[in-house]
Image 1 (spheres, rainbow, N blue to C red):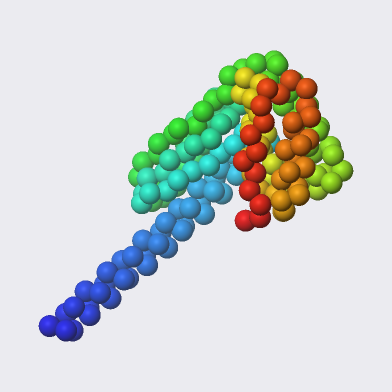
Image 2: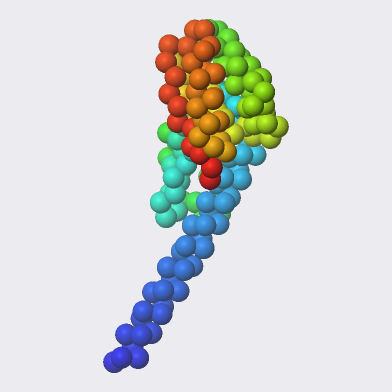
Length: 169
């Protein structure tokens, strides 16, 4: 009887370990596929949640095709059962587009923050919706987080600025 209980515990442990490896693989592949989308830029923010074989896509994008491309890319990953695409397509607005460009120059053109401009995938994401700005992404330290926020607050035309930047990851 004791041997049977031990065997069941070992088999359950192996099943959980395999499931964790499967989830880790899916997580890695989803991240890779989203980062490889050709039109993903600094004004888009994509994120996801994985629950078993279900993937939920969230975030904001400036192009409707990016929303559908993200779903197609994730759906094609082996082991993904269902994709719930909750990505928001930001409204077209010449005012928001001008504001995005001004914010980009204010943040990435500022000397101390200029190093964040080097990677192809920019770590500070600038999301603009109806004049309201949200900063998303990851920076190296609290000073850079505050500096990006101050630079964004100084841009004319921004009604509000939410600083959702995270420090180091």
